[in-house]
Length: 262
Image 1 (cartoon, rainbow, N blue to C red):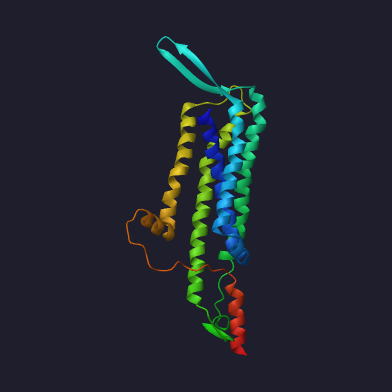
Image 2: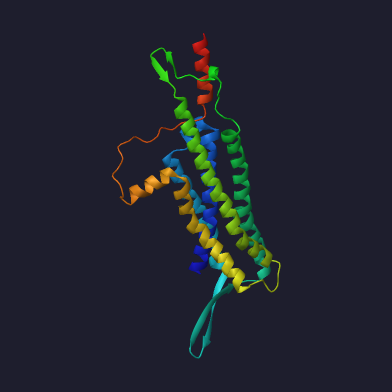
């Protein structure tokens, strides 16, 4: 019973973890001012803890929906896990799982990444001379803007967004065989239990978990640096972390050019 519970817990929490990352990226890029208040480490810890708590409580029902049976042979015994009640009663549960932990997260991720792409890839930095300046002087000090730094921050955000989008696409593709099999078997009697297809579904699930660190390593320089630091492969860098930047520099640059023209 614990194995069944842990299987569903791992399946379901992975979906909403990816959704949480997507929402965080959307807020950080499309609502940069709010992100400075919302996207904090303490809030992230609370959200992750809440997701684990909700999913853990949700999956507790499998302790009451499955049961173990033992068949004794002359040379030993075999224990198998099966339904505790009629199979027809499981159909709403399978559809609820399919909707809450697959369709809704993927639909939400698709919409949010579409909005993120519109900001990052369809709203480029102003390239005209009147919209570019290196700094402007204000009372009480000076504000220096670096167009090169802004472009670097934008490029970094594009790279992170591409990486997370790849993770979401692979999640959708690699989980689709298993999710589809569960829904289809809800209607079929007897269920489709081809051993090779079941093995294929399991391989896709394992591959989804194993491939994510590879994607992070290939597409994220920060992940590679953090991994090397974790493994103590290099000394701790003395450089300060890259400051949080946001697309609000568009309006700042325009104001800057306006002031210089006056």
